[in-house]
Image (cartoon, rainbow, N blue to C red):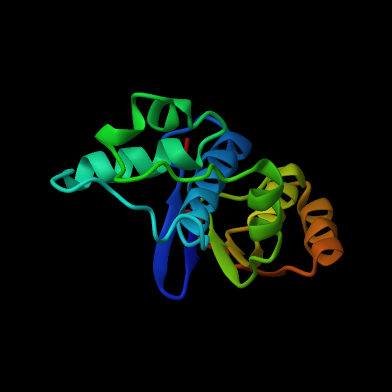
Length: 160
């Protein structure tokens, strides 16, 4: 399962044994990508000399549900020139609720509507998937409920 926006991949969930786990994993990655563009995250005052991987890791921890490993007293100076304010759960939800226009593609059909529910939480507006599940009618219904356009390609790229 792959989420994309404006021609760029923003979340991939490969190697999972179920569609929903794959959809959740890639959706969480897409959400993190979106949160990196939050007005509080863009100007983070990273410490001079901090390597790119260390900046990326600090950003991920900052955006996580527990930013203490990079914001705790005595720790933050290793990452930032000044201690940034954490991003609250409400701020994250508000930012992510405004996301739309995300595309999602899957190499195999979606067998249940829970995949669509999860995709909608990440601003998915378009889905391409092979189709062919015995529950396609339920998946279509969930897309209609969320205003998601779905194309069934008829091409399955994943086989057991």
